[in-house]
Length: 213
Image (cartoon, rainbow, N blue to C red; front, side, top):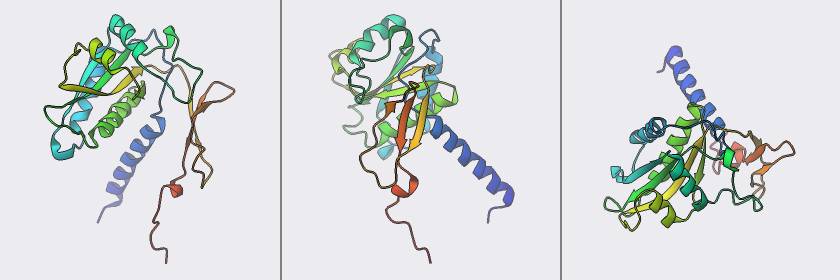
């Protein structure tokens, strides 16, 4: 049986995790003058060592992009926000100052199972804890990304995601979706130019709620 003291410790840890998750929002506009150095980016990659891994194969690898000339080459290969159809991405002074490119090493495994999402969440939570913002990007020109990373023509490494990193320049607000709504989930910007992200209430996530007798 847990003592009251140990219960308190576990609750504190739970609240830390919840707080980080609540603050861990996608950011698409950054302070372009505030550099994220290689060491910080590499330390974020270091967090993924502690993630669970399907079959414990650990087949994911990362390229760290921090040099301004490499960032300039990478940026045009990225597509930023599917719901903002009239927006081509952040302005030059609002662009990320670092990127992580997640690759599948196909010589280790042909399928990473759930590793990609687990590791991306670890990276973004770590970045949030450091006061950084992230945007996980799935839509990009794979050949350009590989070329910037020095992997052009290399079939061993398959790019899965690009994580944009920087110090946030925009505000993000989470709102509750109306209970029972299945379609009203698109993020948007309000009249104050704050990004608004709807989230389903917890009881809409539970299919079987257990015996209540």
